[in-house]
Image 1 (cartoon, rainbow, N blue to C red):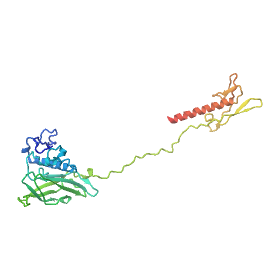
Image 2 (cartoon, rainbow, N blue to C red; image 1 turned 180 degrees about the vertical axis):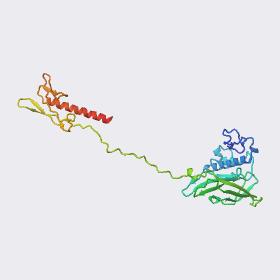
Image 3 (cartoon, helix red, strand yellow; image 1 turned 30 degrees about the vertical axis):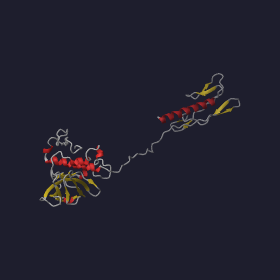
Image 4 (tube, rainbow, N blue to C red; image 1 turned 90 degrees about the vertical axis):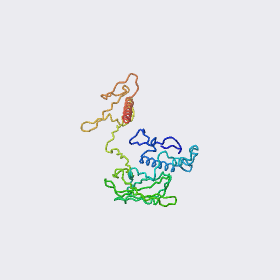
Length: 339
């Protein structure tokens, strides 16, 4: 974390979260002027990343370059961060100078090859130093898998941050053994006219891969097709059992020669038909009643005498009873089907 103003007397802060997860030891605190070169190079690298981020998001309004966006304080955040120097200054540096290694992260599959891009930053914080990088090449057995996406020579001076993109590409997977490739940088100091003032220096950075098992990574393959769940149709060979109800047509009354009224039954309900063991269906006889009976006995199909003064006919009573039984059976069947 850096202060917003270059002239601020407050400490900048940087912590090694691997060894100091609770941020107790500020590497840029009281010892900023005596910190190791590895610490200073890391701080410079992070400053460059912060400047790149602010430049990308600056927009047409100038959120990080116009003082008004910072309540009129300073010359804009980008200028203030670039000018601030609360730790010791170093000359030519690269973001891999401290470790000597540039690790390529997890690759991505583009459809044709496994690809990964990484950025190497360079700069100098010496006010009187101007640098010319005359060449940058990749050497080693696997050098043909790497490309450098910039043209050389490149000149830069005090307060500069120069990003160089290194690309890896391979149509096939690699063996589990480390790749053999190194980045060789040749540079020298120049004066204001561009004349070389020092002998050429060489810095070698070893290139490594974070993961050699490409196929175990999320390589951007197209997602597998979505398979809709299969819903099996309802079986067609299962018989559907529904109660069969034969409605009973009321019997038609007729008058005999003696003046008695009789009824002729029509179709009987399914409950009244019986089958013997040979499959022969027999229909119980219907009992005719005169004015002296109103209904039949459910158990033996015999007539029950009517009460005194009753004028109901047996045929009508029998028809009503059969209709009542049919309605009760229908209602029961609908209730069972609903459950």
